Length: 342
Length: 290
Image 1: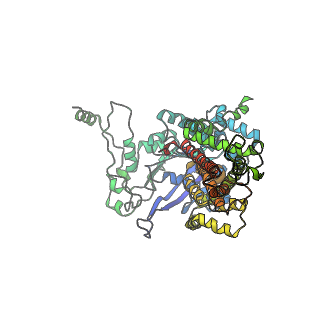
Image 2: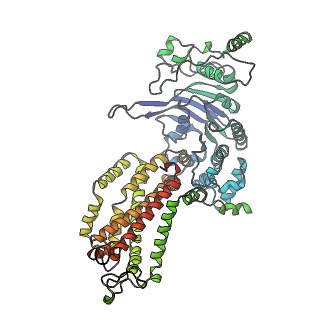
Image 3: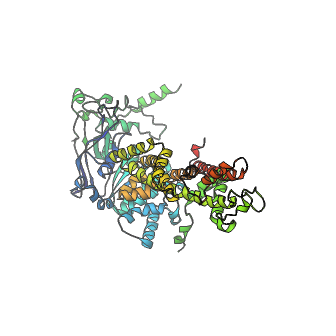
């Protein structure tokens, strides 16, 4: 099937403030040669630690940030080549949901106006029709009609995120970049918002790029998952496949860090060693090698490419055959419990 | 359907539910507001309250305050109360128009500098720095020396030399607001720069602007009084608080009411605007209360 969106070799570098005045500006490669595609109607989860470039990727492919190089093919057309002005009609198709529901709504505008804004900008509705359209959107996201003339500060975080979703839906987009849409919310509210996102995906046949730093959130909603580390995609596979048998040591470590809500099953954890290296000075070769239990000499010199490790399971690791999700046998499980109890 | 009619319900909830209760609790601010309001009302209604301020009656010159002339008469027998109220119209007009000019220029330049950044910011802010290098009062003196002293020139000059603080303020607000997510959201919706500046950033930068404008009125009134006192502001026979003071100066020993009351009017008005301005600032951002 023809992908709806194809991202090839996307790169975005930020110039930071120089250490000394007049010194060379250190460069931060936030997104480093990232490629993936989005099939129509699917959800691609994009996971990684804070600062790994996942939000930058999302914003760069919508051209809310200008990427340095690469191509973003939307319905076969490279949207990075469009002049900035010509992006406006495309914004109807490409929408975004933001992470912080407290910062993403203008505090001085009624939420009805915020939701209506994309419709007004694209001249899709006006007057009474506009108001009915906003009321319909409020209903879709599960808010009351009487909320339309209230201000953002009168709402809870979950309600505000619903408002943000209604705003993104207003222009009937085909692709929504959801930038950590539930990270700022309570756990119970997270589930509601995820369910809402799934419902509207069905109803409006949406394609999602779902950005999160939490693998368990992504597991529930994603068809495929991409894992990012220091600006690069290190693994990309079908969600079930990736969770069952990760092929990159970083993914494995992330999966081991997911807490299991079962007091009887105490896993011996194989946690990551060391700190996240500074993105200003990433380690040479594979960025992950200083923290990797499977690192080879080659990893320190040449970065591995993202390759098919069988069945469309992509991973950027020379030693991916050695990676297996580490599990404790039941015996060792008991042993650890004895050790921890006095 | 009644859904449509709820539009009226939550009108401007920020001002009504957050700002106003906070401002009302602040006694000093309310005192300032009372002074400001009564001055404005008295000045507006002056024609209905007092005699003609230009009516000369030499037989009644330098009368001490009495029931007939509550604030006395001046050296030409004119009613001091009438002249103070009419002078208040001039002073307030000068204050508001000058602040209007300064706020407009400052907002436009500050917004451009803060929103576009880079060289636009560099050019505008260096221009601000240059303007700030001149001691503004002497700049005004120099300019007035070349122009005909009229209240319109005074307003324009006070306005044209008072916008730099506003520009810096608005620039700082724009710098922080343009990075906020709701601005990014507007851009994602396809909004153009103009829409983002006027609909999204400016309304959020309005509060500090309001504070600076309120305090600015006090400053402009003081400047106008000083200029008139030096004889290069509002010209007699048009009354203004400043040029009444200069007449009073000559008779300070014998007729104190000639200078005391215009001075008191300046003091009260400036105090009122300052108290109100600080009260508004505290009400807008309670964290700043020191």
